[in-house]
Image (cartoon, rainbow, N blue to C red; front, side, top):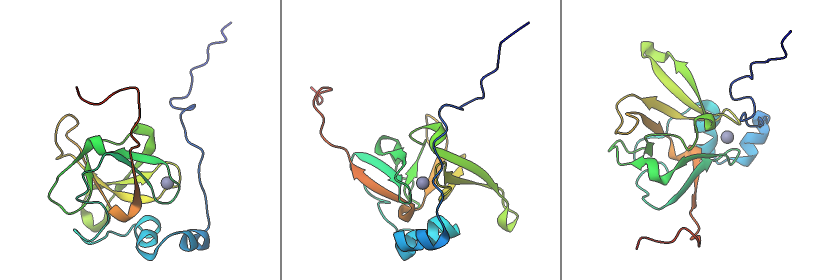
Length: 154
Ligand SMILES: [Zn+2]
C-alpha cells in the first residue's frame, strides 16, 4: 500500500486567473493597450512605451498588474520594442505556438490574464539566448524603490 502521490508540477505556483469581459477590458485599457493585449496586436516599432527605457524597475502586465520582466534582463535589441532575455519567473508567462502566415513563432502571454504580450525568439543574448520581444503597450513600468539593506555599490 502506498500513499505516495506525485505532486502536479507547479500546482502551488499557479497564479489565480484574472478573467474579465471584453467590455471590462475596453473600459480599463487605453485604445493601444486594448488592441495589443486583447486583440494580439503589435504596436509599430519605436512607437510604443519604454522600448528605450533604461531605468531600474519592474515591467508589469498592463491588464492585471502581474510582474512580468525585470529591467535587469532588458537589453537593447535595436528592434524598437522592449526586449528581455528572460521573464521575472517562468510561471509569469505562458507560451503558445503561433502559426500565422506559415511562420512558426512563439507567442508570449501573461499567465494570469492571458494578455498578449509579444513573441519570443531564439536569437537573444546570453545567458538564455532568448529574445522576448514585447509590446510596450502591454506593460506598465514601475520604478524600483530605493531600499535600505542591500546597500549600493561600494
Ligand atoms: Zn496579466
